[in-house]
Length: 485
Image 1 (tube, rainbow, N blue to C red):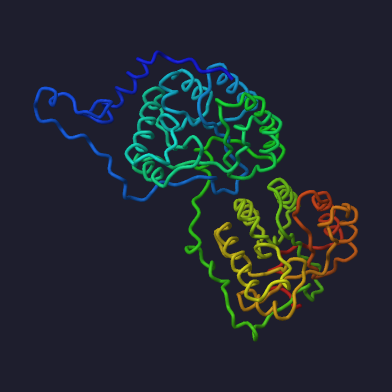
Image 2: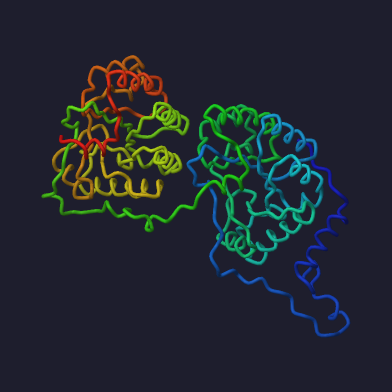
């Protein structure tokens, strides 16, 4: 990748100097007072940037949204040839991206920044010199961000709304500075293809394909690895394959929401540790007793965004509501996916945090795992989940069942229809035939949302086959409420 061409140093110095005069009246670049002081008169003291004491700005490692959108972002500003090629590739794949530009590079080659805007992309603040801010004082951090804002606005007419450091990591002062400057937030990322390690275009695309998800923020660099240019095609293909849009960061934020803290969500404490469990009452629910041809379709565990999104799409296409029993450790990595289930009209419920065989835990350990899962799921979906607990592997004994009930989950959701679909050696035909043979009125059907199994292939046939037999799909909580078991 070529070195960028620079304007003469004196011209760049002049741009920054003029901004410093506006930014710190009465002081020159070296911090000495000017004007009256040089004439022996009383000088105004140098302005001091006080540490901001108000509420810090928002922080975005990702955006909270259930919409099928994510953002492609770039750090730094490569040479003209590289940037034009990159912009052409983005145009060819109809992608609008967000560029975090260092103020010094914009001062050097403002025409590149103007071209980025003209192509329909977004420009944001990558600090003035891309310094490591961790060891700087508050006032120095403030100037790195504020001066970059000033340069970008002066050269392009656009005032940045977001700031990102070179590495994406930052000290606690940065959100305070951003708030003090009236910016919307501090941005990091949660999809990092590690292009700094000189990954090839295909490897970069494969990484994005593996970790793509709603609200994700992809981070690449424009001035390190030339392979980012051909990688755009692979990234676009990964998004198209799952039906996601790549949008600018500000559009992603505008379409998203702000997550409430756990303690502000009603029902966050519906599950709690309770050592007095010996007399707790519980119900083991395998199916319900009904003559109506109602069945509950349930999915266990967790999977990649691609796998689970395909399941959600199939359910939407067939207008079927289901119940998802979530392994909460997976939910932590992609809370937006859990929220998408709720917004799709489905119920989500507790399948533990770490997916243990519950009989291998003490009652106290089991309650700790269950309560942690409840809190993780509640925070992810921003509401109380359905109060059903399904033990991993379906194994539970009397003592653990009492401990589960005492912790807030008296209804232990099991199943009467299973095809061992979690085993990849079981084909789609095996899954379909197993469900069709076992299902009866009031059945609870167990399937899984794991990657690399045949459930997605079988699911449309399972749904259509049961519909052809006159069955109606209901969520498990509704099935329990409507019928005796």
